[in-house]
Amino acid sequence: MEERQLLKVASIYFSILGFTMYKHTVKNTRYAFNDLKTLMAKATPFRSGDALANLCADRYEERVAAQMCLADLPLKTFLSEMVIPYESDEISRLIIDTHDAGSFSAIASFTVGMLRDWLLSDAATTSSIQELKYAFTPEMIAGVSKIMRNQDLVLAAQKCEVVTKFRNTIGLKGRFSSRLQPNHPTDDLKGIAASIIDGLMYASGDAVIGINPATDNPATIYDLLQMLDSFIDKFSIPTQSCVLCHLTTTMQLMQQNAPVDLVFQSIGGTEKTNKSFGINLSLINEAYQAGLALQRGTVGNNFMYFETGQGSSLSANANDAVDQQTCEVRAYAVARHFDPHLVNSVVGFIGPEYLYDGKQIIRAALEDHFCAKLLGLPMGMDICYTNHAEADQDDMDNLLLLMGVAGCNFIMGVPGADDIMLNYQSTSFHDTLYIRKVLGLKPAPEFESWLIQQEMMDDDGKQIAVSSNHPLLKYAL
Image (cartoon, rainbow, N blue to C red; front, side, top):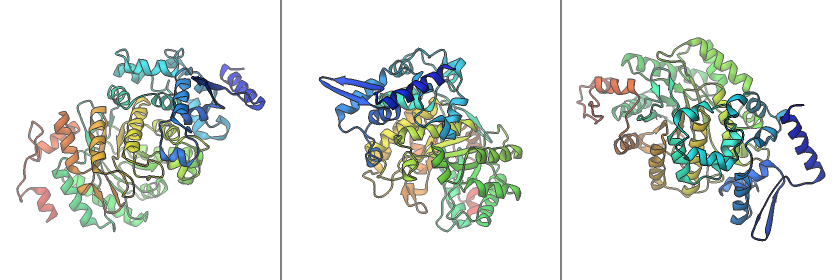
């Protein structure tokens, strides 16, 4: 019997006998945690979603005890005890079945605390972290993030470089991209085109020109895809398009020869969550194979686009008593399996029931970005909040700067930072220009060359005012 199976049998045996597997004493108080997912939940920095699910620590001292216990936990434990059983969840099976035991041998003697220390040391380099992409499981990385300060999450994530290619190259160090998000409440083609032109004038859109459609109507989405494709082709823009409809709608439109660039889907970290989205791994793979056959990329063929967000599993009553941050990181195993071009967390979008205020949103965004990068994902961030959250644009300004320093691959570019279709607050075209300027960053290299050719940016990255005769503005008129 394999070591993993033996440890699993032991775990079940101790549970049946009522033994406590994890415990830690602070002063004269002994804190006990019955299983790994309880330990992980109690160690998580406080957030409203875990309180709603009755999973969080009862007080700060219990949280510290859980974090100290977690720090001493061997990484091997995550291979023998799953937070959701292997037999009952296809994401658990994906995590274990794709784990690289060979590369894991380099860190097999580590505890969670030792992994944190290594990640913050000079020994952890860009290349050495990349080599461990499949040695890490999501639960290992979620665990180490729970014992890290905000600055630790920034420092470790900054070491990572995850580069993807389709019609341009995203994720290179020294580069910072944006998704141009020209949503319209009625999917009006002229209104969307006006927002696209506005965004391009502010050097936004190198990650993708991506529309959230007001409806999932195939005919409407077909028209949106045709408009985006003809616009990109007319001006030879080195970027990609995406209409963020359901996976099955995209597959239907691919059969109709619609010009699909990126294939989008929202995903979660449990099988039950994805079932609530109307998907599973088999369906995603079917869409992946269909997209692969299109071969629409010019410099590469990373074409999947996934969105995630803490609280999605709990909101679907599909979290299996696992804390929301661990559920989130498990979703990254799904994304990683399909070699995506873009992934982003919609960190504050799901609402204050899960991330109550600016402090919780900022912490969650830093966790999401760090964990995704360690697992090898091209992670971006929708730096956002809903209008009923205890957050404001100052919080988003702070988070934007933190994301820029941490090496985030891309953010959203929304006209005026106010999405009038989805009714939430995000980042604007100006925010992309700001973060590039203060941190000395540039757009994707192919997109940068196009902006210079179009005389909208100079060689030093400075914006150039254009005349009313500029081809893009003449198109708008």
